[in-house]
Amino acid sequence: MRLSRILISQVRCFNSTNTYLKISTNNLKTKNKGVSSNHWLSRQLSDPYVEKAKLMNYRCRSAFKLLEIDEKHHILKPGFIVIDCGASPGSWTQIAVKKVNADGSDNNSVKGKVISIDRQLLYPIEGAIILGNTDFTEASSQDKVAKELGGAKVDCVLSDMAPNATGIPDLDHENIIKLCYSVLKFALKHSNVGGSVLVKLWQCGDTKQLISDMEKFYRSVKSIKPKSSRSDSAEIFLLGREFKGLKVT
Ligand SMILES: C[S@@+](CC[C@H](N)C(=O)[O-])C[C@H]1O[C@@H](n2cnc3c(N)ncnc32)[C@H](O)[C@@H]1O
Image (cartoon, rainbow, N blue to C red):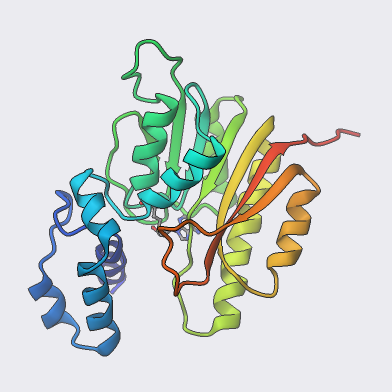
């Protein structure tokens, strides 16, 4: 039961030629003939970003959201230490590894570090430290991340985490906001002064409060809707830049 849920959500993110999990449209058709599934499938097949992800060997179309955000805001630089929360199947990690040179493939740049965490299985990505089957919201998981950091401070905390949708909007919003606060708290504790945090959420009544809380700790907070984010989705990203640091009293 658990495994089938995991597979379905990974299938929704993986592109169809991914080497880690091949899917065929036949499988999907026979598994679920529901209207929403057919809608998802036809949307997937006509989505230019799905095709582009395939061509560029990204594990998922979400890659383009981070690429777009980074192109404009330059949050990932060689040598940076990055935490990628909700990283599975791994396209953000693929990008972060290259941008911060975590795999050391660019001899002329300083080497960075990427620690990727997801409560689902996460297949290895060269250059990244992978913590799969790990729920980020649990204290023990954050301790594991801290241990990997070995006392170093983080330059950028990314979160594309999304809870399983219940279909009850208020509950879904509450759940994603909880994830955002968990990321924010972690970022406050472990970030370098000047660092940044990027969180995904579904726009809701609590968005304003979250922005105002982020503004207490970051010099600038921007709400971003990348072009590659589906227009019919309430998904937005909040980018907090230039962490002010915590006053120790
Ligand atoms: C949209 S996907 C992320 C896609 C990813 N950014 C990429 O580019 O491949 C959202 C992920 O958040 C993860 N997630 C949700 N809640 C989580 C939690 N509490 N701890 C860790 N991961 C979580 C899910 O398992 C899922 O893999």
